[in-house]
Length: 173
Image 1 (tube, rainbow, N blue to C red):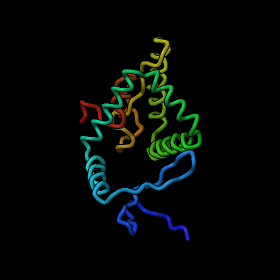
Image 2 (image 1 turned 120 degrees about the vertical axis):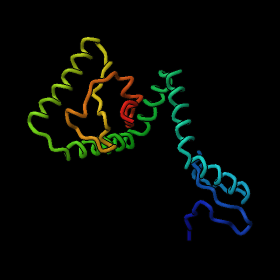
Image 3 (image 1 turned 90 degrees about the vertical axis):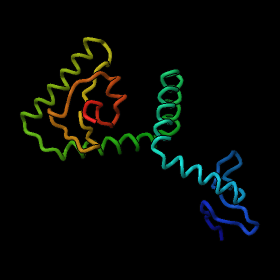
Image 4 (image 1 turned 120 degrees about the horizontal axis):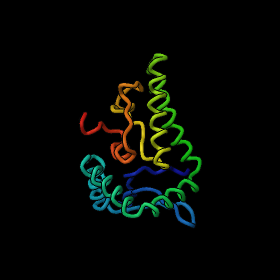
């Protein structure tokens, strides 16, 4: 009988199971001593639960991207090419979530016309500059409970909108 091992299972000789790994010769098992297992489990637990650590990591990644954007764009394209199905699933699940949130907002015909005008204005600005320099931004992001209504939309620079991500803008925080 082939038993599936779990992280932390202990063998008769005292070694602790860390996890499976892939190699050219197939799938292997990684075993370590109890001391190393405890040490690395504590480190991973602290890093995983620390918002400060997560923010530092996010900032390091942003700096690395801005220092060499072409390298990271190339790496992203390579990853997407290798993981096309996973990429589609991630992309579609995020889009579906956003559509569901937007559909739950009841908007009048007048509001839909105003929303369309805001997006049209943004398109005009981008055509004038001949590149995407402006985005339509939700002041309170949809994922944080904001609605897709004219009062919650504004045209901002692309750089500001991308840096803001799914957070509240500085003047609303």
